[in-house]
Amino acid sequence: MPNAQLIQDSISLLQSLIQTPSLSKQEDKTAELIVAFFDSRNCKTERLGNNIIVRNKYFDPTKKSILLNSHHDTVKPSPSYTLYPYEAITTDGKLFGLGSNDAGGALVSLIACFLHYNEIQDLKYNVVLVASAEEEISGKGGIEMVIPSLGQVDFAIVGEPTLCKMAIAEKGLLVLDAVSKGKTGHAARNEGVNAIEIAMKDIAWIYSKPFTQVSDLLGPVHVNVTVIETENKAHNVIPDQCKFVVDIRVNELYNFDEILEQISEHCQSTFTPRSKRMRSSIIPLTHELVQNGISMGLEYYGSPTTSDKALMPFPALKLGPGDSARSHTADEFIYLKEIEQGIDCYIQIIEKLILSK
Image (cartoon, rainbow, N blue to C red; front, top):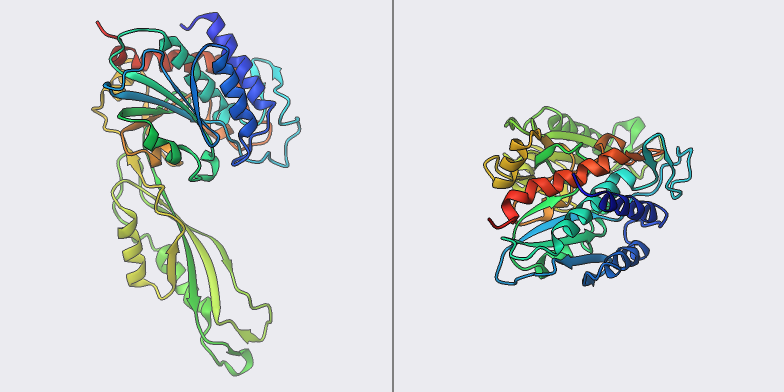
């Protein structure tokens, strides 16, 4: 188990992070706090935007690196909060506060893991930690901005609340802005071409489950229409335009272009992807990191939610303390025991890979 001081330092850091608001794109204060934490431990940091990079003491540019990554931005607090979201209240073995579970617990646990290995010489890999920004909005000022400066990364651990189960695969996210076009007319005379009717037919096809390949890990592709609107507000006018939004959670058996091609072939509306960045990702079950986790008794699964793992061009495992079901909820919390378990989990899972014999 990690030493008591490392655990206490991690909890204290998390309390400070909770007490420092850090909405996406507004993480400058928590970035300063993280830099100060490392400065006090004589660890040199590099800052790109609100992303903090730390390399182990005996970093060797000829070696490949293990990346430890989690984020320090948060969503806006839910209106349903009964506690002050920035107070960091500890009671009954729980630490409450915005970002405590998503993903502060994972971040401070990864920082503790980094410090555990920081001063060890002759590691097989470099250890690089990135406390990143803009994860909650999949922003381009987050991990994507940092990756080119990291050098040779062999694989990564992405700290997110998974109950310390290994999320070896993630669904991709494809959001489409759709527009159906008709022709305006008077409803009484049944004139025009109703854009809503065109949209309804397209939506019906989308809901007919056309994407038939089912993943063993991630299940089927899930498609939902989440917004529909028209500028027309008059009951007696046939609308000539209807807009709707399609949220598609894609398994690893499809790429985004395949999805778009099928939709375009069968639908009259036009579909424009907001982004093609958040692709489905998977780390092989045979990867040494995953095999180490299995030998520790860790379970593995496919995650329906996306993370910065999707933006990484190297194998990445999503893993961390806390429970995804608590993320973005009112009165968010993490168990203090989970932080201790998270630190121990991270240290153990890379131990065999990183220590020279």
